[in-house]
Amino acid sequence: MPRTVRGTRRTAGAAAVLTVLSLAATACGSDPQPAAAPPPAAASTGGKPAVKLPESLQDLKNLKVEDLAAWAEEHGFKPESLQDYWDKAKMLAAQGVRPKDANIAEARTPTRDQVVFPPAIPAKAQPHPYNANTAVVGKIFAEVNKNTYSECSGTVVADPRHPGKSNLVWTAAHCVHGGKGADWLKKTSFVPAFNRPGAPAGRKDVPFDQLAPHGAWTVEDMYVMPQWTQEGGEKGSGASQYDFAVLRVRNERGGGGKSLEESVGGAVPIWFNAPADRLTAFSSYGYPADAPFDGMELEHCDSTVKPVPYVYDPARPPMLAMGCTMTSGSSGGGWFGARDGKPALVSNTSVGNSTNTMLAGPTLGDEARKMFEYFSAKR
View (cartoon, helix red, strand yellow):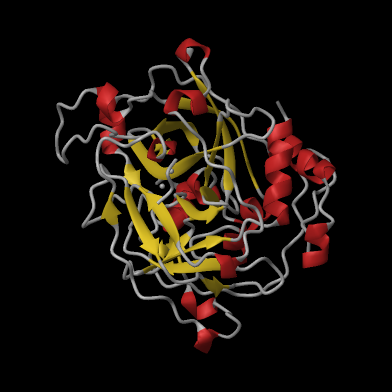
């Protein structure tokens, strides 16, 4: 378990999120099917030169900060003012975003007949009240359309540029962006330590402060890899190997000037390029909302076996797969391993199968590191 740490929904762009979304559909939905296909070049808009996608591992290694900045300028997220928008009624009405369908028919690990997942690990509820370490995990809420809302999971991560005062959250790209042909989700907000005290399921009289003990933090900026926005879809694919996002949030009410990290009592460092063979014990966390879960409890699956490589496109960093019974809503939730005896984020829930017995998440390699460093340096 992370001693510090998982949903979203929508329409056209929401459909893509729904599959990837709560890890019940794809990561928890239909079976994953990785397929290898060369990534298309980015489409040009507004007369600007198209931002070309890396087409090989060497291209990825040569990815420059200027490339990320150029893409952000062209396709960047536009912030909104959300003070008092998220209330108890909207939060309780939100539906968990399902992890993308694992699409096993397209998986190449390295060949389809070799795709064997670890045994399913039953998810366990985190005891209430959540301590400062576990309070870093929370829910990401977004508006799909009028009166329709989605929920995913996310993690407060450490910001090297602002030690001890991070306002950064890590989640899955499909939780905040619909993928190919879609756009950013609207009115996106992060609620750390959702239901920390432990309100029972079905309670409609639960005070807002109990569901959101640290308030709802407005997303003022976020970034996903260009590969996701240009290729991401309803099922697991090569784009899923880049299914991660970083968000910057702010407290609409001021919060006494405290950062997100200071408010919840901690943040988890990201372990980029974590060696899979060293992950002999790791955990995934999230707020699964589909039966048998209800979205009110922070759940976790604790693995004692190494993650299994899961690949759609061999030219891209492999995904990691584990046995886990979490469902929709767990999408975006953090995966934690121990680095020097302390918890560190090594991946996030991206896809799952239809029987809710496995989940897979992207490897956070050099491209994820460059994206994160670029985003952190923006402020």
